[in-house]
Length: 281
Image (cartoon, rainbow, N blue to C red; front, side):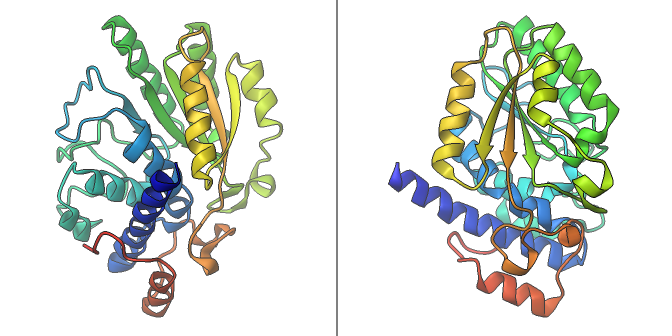
């Protein structure tokens, strides 16, 4: 396990460098949530999921992931590139005109790894439920994963989808909520308080689990436990505690870096805190 965790930490450090450089290159993007979800997505793509970078849109007989909070595209693009879905060098085109790497993930340019446009908050869970039902119809035993933001839970469609999934026993679905307590306008509790999330999800008929999104042993063991509890009649949600901006000290724990790019000096400071392990793009 220690060797695996060391490997994952090395990949995550490079992914965080990729995030900073993508956003800084165009002075645009969302570094805060991207940095906060890096450890989770690194563990998911480089250890947990059974997925194929050669990419088939139908994802038959493989696990599939949907990013509902699509504004954190910098981390997903880096993860996909470092997993072999497309060349790492393409990260340098992030948010440029005619790039496949749009600010929010899009499908019209055919970027491998992206199965649905996302970032219109509240919609990704519904899509993930549809994919999970399709797997059931196709006798496909693999798992559908989805990630949402905690501020995104203020969207009504999330709870419509939550009711639907529980009613139809969509139990091959594992949803993770990035519970960092921050959104673009400030702390969640100051914008619209989320209340008791465990009680909410449980009352909607979901199996609720908790996870530390920066502890690899906990990430791996929690998702393994979720998989063991799948296919038992209930969809599963993992409430994942993270820190926005994780890995860059001046970005950590504040909403101010939700959608703000660092200037040249800040970029150098950020990169000095992150080890280059796989080579920059």
